[in-house]
Image (cartoon, rainbow, N blue to C red; front, side, top):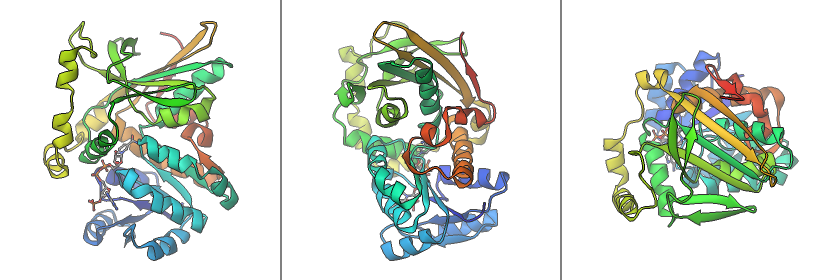
Length: 352
Ligand SMILES: NC(=O)c1ccc[n+]([C@@H]2O[C@H](COP(=O)([O-])OP(=O)(O)OC[C@H]3O[C@@H](n4cnc5c(N)ncnc54)[C@H](OP(=O)(O)O)[C@@H]3O)[C@@H](O)[C@H]2O)c1
């Protein structure tokens, strides 16, 4: 499985993906827009490489048509995904990315018919956002046919990389309200903190969780058929804190965050170190409910978010090149709800 391209290879997560690929016996071609950074990494890892600017459409199409698959790791994907998707459609090349951005998921999914015509898979979100949440959501949904509501919560985002922080800033700039849910099939903005609740995770901790614009809001309805979806992230708060309180909202007014420049992000934020990636764990919960109040829930424990992204990304490459799924798909539709269990150190639990 050597004829595939890793784009954005010299980024924080790109490098983790490249190292995981080597560990599993792959020799991807490393690519990125900066020729020198790409060459240095390729030399360190002893892999082939190519400098590729997404604005150079002719070269992009030519290179992409020559490989079987692209794993795209250069974000914010709102700026990088579309030209690569187009090149993959034109070249009949499978496309995978590690986005978590809702407009990017929606854009990728909009090419379903074209992807089917071309006989390729387009799968956005083969990282922490959204492999474990999508797979766990699909698992509980399958246990309760006719479910109308799906809730998914996670804890375990340890430290963001600068690329993740920049992507979050880009998302916030386009979103006046930081909360988002899907209701009756439509995305509905809401104030950050509305709908906060407490969730018991499988490590025995009960934490406050708040609805956030996680990728599942774009994909879970497709994966499960459920039209009401809420994705929550756990936050550490002193007991009794109400996220919707005026004081908390003022603190969260993200004016500060919105003014932080990309350069400052690079300087301040560096992502989890090796020790944290190896030792931290992520914990997830999902619950499907129907109109009669029946519910099915399940829990998941897995790797630290960036390590999970590296392992899931390369497993997704292997599954795609082996099974050749076709269409614009969510991870669970492309690889099955049990896909997440193939990630080392992952456990799904039906009852606590
Ligand atoms: N789904 C998940 O769970 C998950 C997990 C990890 C990361 N991510 C996402 O993956 C992306 C990368 O994260 P990271 O931690 O690797 O960030 P990073 O270290 O900042 O790396 C970003 C990479 O993207 C490249 N890039 C940015 N804009 C580009 C453009 N217009 N054209 C070509 N290349 C471009 C950068 O190249 P230059 O250095 O030349 O700018 C760099 O190689 C982020 O969007 C992040 O949110 C998602």
